[in-house]
Image (cartoon, rainbow, N blue to C red; front, side, top):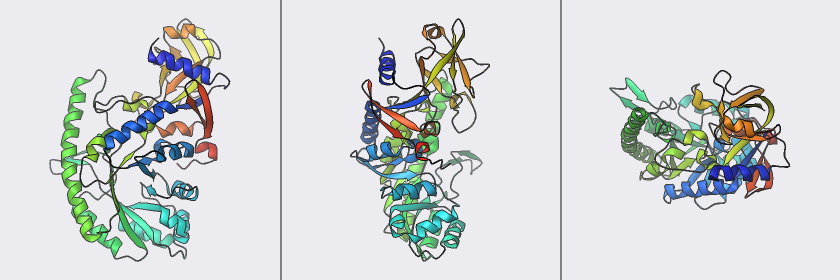
Length: 400
């Protein structure tokens, strides 16, 4: 019996009393992945990315572990909700135009003390000021460094189009604007190198592209380490009290942690280990989050149909954004239908051993987006569901 076959047997036993569709988190795998992230961070604290977890109970679980500190949130409404729920160190990783949220933040001392917001433009400061509605609390601010690799005088770019603040000089200029402005305090600097942390460098069947990715990432890490160090020095010259410098992501934890200028690491996807993180040479993890769909039809030899399944992930459209049938091993999508809105046919010899009502287990392409499809996660230890906890959706929230 392979390890995957044994996992399937455990998951089937654990959820025998539950009808699919359903989702679970294997706590042993979740905890092992958390421990590996801490190992790779080499003593620097990890700020857990909530968008990759989207479940308060699991955020609390990982933050109770040594080596994790603070949350990196994805909307202002989520940030305020987490702060009201007892999370006292929340960094909003993206700029917001939520005027009502800023009014609430500026009027509440507890929220203002717990939440830091992201800016990369003076216009965002103007929006916050215009939204205060009489609130006088100081708003904590973090600046974002554009981490993209620019070559040939900027004509060639690798990396996400995020902040306009690419140079240390531009960061220092915005830092001066914040420091001169009443009602704001500059507390942090962040840079997310998604072209390193979020791009696999060991693509199955594509050795040439894999080597090109590794070469690009080596050059990008070298350039960014030098520029980020200079940026931190420039910002600290304006704001010596800067509290943190955040960087990285699941795929680059150990590389980013090696930079002296970085004080903390961001990571989250590595806890669930979705399929997009199978293609890395720098680390291996254990799939921890899965969802099950029930067999509802047997159209013929070598094919079954499951209910649901059309759960694509965000990003550039492609086959890599689809979930994958994981257990039993050997199933695949029908290329003419893919993952369907209401039903999904699956092909392969294992289909002939599946009965109506049996579960087929899938892995999502990305991490937290799975939770937008399910109200609860069943937490499995061994072959037992030991708890059932709500996702953000299960608590009535769809922040994006």
